Length: 163
Image: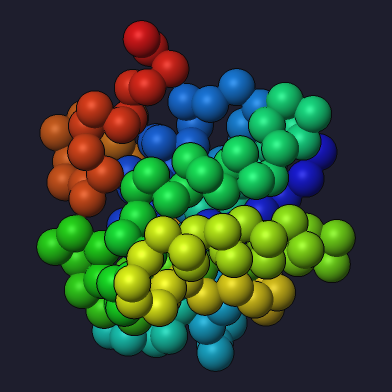
């Protein structure tokens, strides 16, 4: 099993999106790569500097990292700075936060290929994970608990594996 942390705007939809794929064994939403310990949702909304992030535990044999990153790029606007959909602020930045040095070359190769598809620089932060704090329980699997909840991820992308 491997773990990667992906910030892709509002974490509610990102978690629901990734939960659908074979090979994804576990997800958890939280706050990553900010300057303080144990922020609350209110802190994050007040520009604490943390990114809304999904921790993804996945089976590399079933879902290689580059394939997972391809899926990630389906739900983000990679040239948008601190914004995804109608959500604006530093907490909605995009980022790929890795925990093992061996993941970096895969990420770099993937990002180099993605860069060629855009005429503007990519705004996706690539960095080692500095910290991750689990979000409050009511945020975990939020769209399962609140099916009508707002999300920047189109509903059609939340059920790709149902087809």
